[in-house]
Image 1: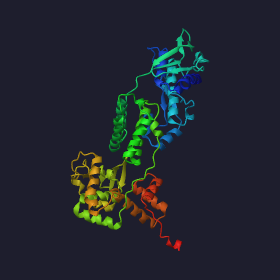
Image 2: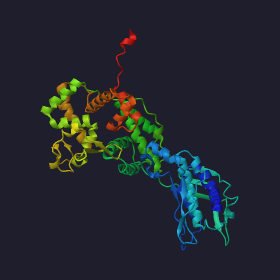
Image 3: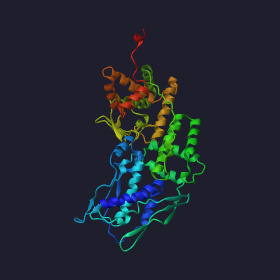
Image 4: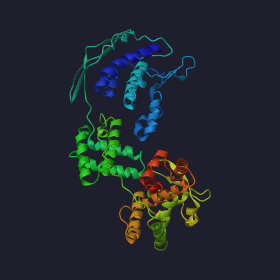
Length: 483
């Protein structure tokens, strides 16, 4: 096997350092090697196609994983694996993994680029007869591939580069380093086509609500471009910066940042599919934005609202109690179907944003407020604009907006509340109330650990930031220290 590794390193010296390093398309190199290799069409393959192990994550879905998952994958060794037919058993047997210097690279991009070239070269060697169970003669490579070819020029329509020409005699191939190979650059994909392809991919990677917001922002950017029939590579960083500046002038830093985040995700997918060389949107800075603040209700105001809704709108009141007692977000409540409510074990099956279904308990205070679910269709949503468990084809975003507007009309106008009070205010109010109650008998750390199980925050640090944002913990009266 050592002779195969030696040959691979020599081939990589040619392809990776001298060609890939100058930005050449890997398919071009693969085409070249394929054109200058002798492959017997009657040859029975004794090996599996080499593949890349990328730390346990699918490289094509790299951006869909969390940062922690990506870092965990990069801590593992990446390598090429393949099987070869054992001459004794006649069965395919997994061979030792090939790593080369792949794991000295710290980024996914560099590591995968190196292994891609190594994999292509390994497949070519195997096709030409390399055998890990025999001594292989690759003497024809010695001193040839180590002479790195020089890049003459890179034009917009043609690439001229010195590459070795392989000719075969009756014995071993002879390599010459003086032929010039010209390869036309493939026609680039248009802006319109690239956007259609990536949006289809993203649709399968995101939940319905997130995708709708994402699609809306991306299409607005596309519609702002002067000519969508131009190549996708014609879009520059300056084009995106100007577009984001226009959003900032019309709206707010927060909206501008949200558009930048979605555009960066979109251009990253363009990079992953090799439509563009790199995601330059990621280099555009995020602006400092003042976060929106949803005020908490005083105990007296919250009681007045509940008493009023008990008479005027019991459906809206129950919706609010799911926020208050179940600590759910409005969009999560709109996703609840009758079958998601388990009255045997008092459990809620909640579909949260960018997470698998999570299970939450139904506290007794909320359980006694539920209507009779046994007479309702299990596939219907609990809350609809027309009442409990009615047929409803409206999308979840629209259902959420409906209850927000209903709150504005029924409650905010009645109590003359300003824009700082929203449905979210009930969640903040009851988390604040619960935390302060827990603090009466527990240390801050214990209280936060208990609260995290109830609110669903992923980490203590995330919960602590949330509690700071809503001013859940206030100091004792410090007047005595000032006297």
